[in-house]
Image 1: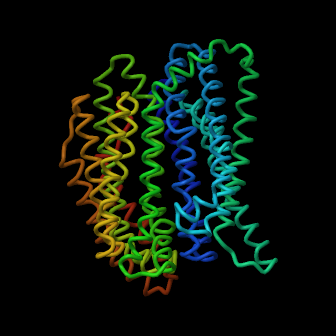
Image 2: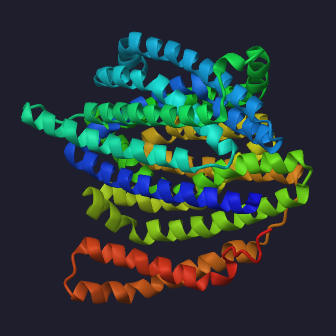
Image 3: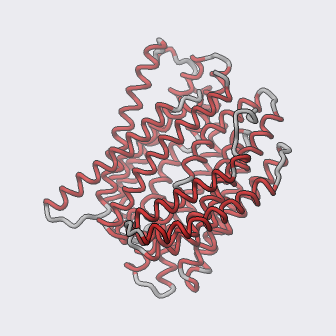
Length: 505
């Protein structure tokens, strides 16, 4: 199978399973918003940056580094060295994960009460601490498959994890009701733990079967320090990036409710708004990024291979095609969330605030989706330090807006900071890439054609909307038909711009 075909198939598998997983997660968020409410959802979201920071300490950069080295060794047909990298990276990350899990569990009380300023996060931190070693193992094994452009196992694992998480949360919800307990954020944390347990076991079983078939034994590993040194040389900038970013993101998470309260809100109101934004609105905004995330995962090792072979023209073509694709997706998402955001917020989450946030955050989409793919390409080119500086710059702007704008403008100040941050980060990534590889960019087909197609598609749905309304269809059905009609017309109008096998390099 050619590399191009393997890349397309891998991206398709990741996108398909990722889309199914996001759909499940989408309904899961609706379930949580209806059962535990916006305030409890906000409490659960407070824990996420701390959990991410603990994961960053033990696995950030290791998966990416593993994927890059495994891709190189696979290209050299050196399967044994690739397996040595996998074992060394996984053992190292797992040992760090055990330490991180212990520290988070042991210090959950001061972290919850002092650092997060919310004692109700303590039991959530303790549950999430148990997930860290499990998540690390799964992450490293996924790096093995991504490095070989094999996405079936990580995709199936992701889907299995999400399914178990949702079913477990629902089961715990029923137990809470039976015991007369009010549903809380704890059911979401326990669901996350259950999903990590199953995905970890599944990954271990699959990799054991594969290594047994290859006849590999751990005792054949010699000089693990050399493999670890190579992994860490590439991973440490990514690790520093993720740790520092997690620290800043945790600071941002803590500051948003605090600065909202400084503007006159009480604790419950500030947590509710934070819950609506991060637990309802942002998952919808990130929903289309399933596609760009899949592309990003496959791009990094592919760009690394092209760089190793000196194929700079192919890298330039990849960058140009990536920008064009992300703009087509981003402008479509902008139109959907802007024109139908209010209806989505009210019908899906029973929240007018969610609808208002969706319309405002719609303008993030083109920059948000492009940002992740450009970051992956830069990482594949080995520009991890540049990615680190760019990320810090973007998050620094967001924190500045939280501190200075939120007390006077409310949550709108933070939304403005998000947009300014994404614009700056995308511009910096494009500049770094252009200095490294001169790629072409044509504004008319990449920006104006998609914008015109989206406006035309949205305009054509208005008479369709009134017709469906007149027929007495349920509002939710009308919404889905409106979005579906707009998507069909948009793709139809942009047929000449869509990638085709004939134009693929």
